Length: 193
Image (cartoon, rainbow, N blue to C red; front, side, top):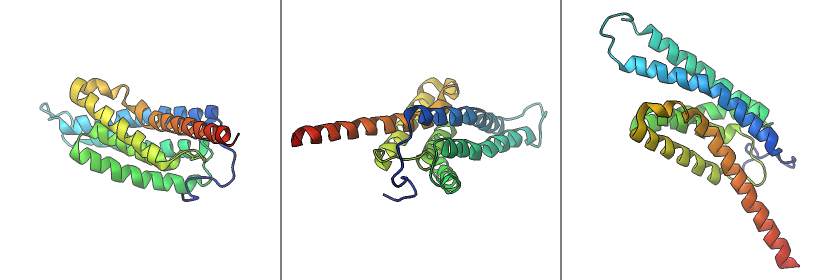
């Protein structure tokens, strides 16, 4: 595993601080997400009365949402005490744009934003010894598929809870990986005894 993801010989981040980082990053993501969705919906609808012929309101909402996304990853990287937060934020932005555009191209914009921010969270959220990239990637897939199913079944109502999915899924994946590692260590101690 690359040392860019996992801090060498650092104490694991206490769960309280990890969930604080996830919560604050999610609170920053909510207005960014909703602004993006407002802009995308405004751009997709026909303006029959000609109130905004240039599309400036839609563009402004999208620009505001996109401008907030780096601050989401900054909050996540710095508050989770990532060993290299600036590099993590840059990688998170690149991964977020790539994955988000790919998923949005094949499915829908809501799922694309959830998948993109989840993918960026993989590298922005500090990775401790027991955490695995595999479990985090699985969390991105689960959050994205869940969002996609909600979009297809309940439609617009998914806009309310969707910003909660990306980083919560990563936190749960890390928690389950820690439990698995603790169980393996306990089984190893019992086997030696």
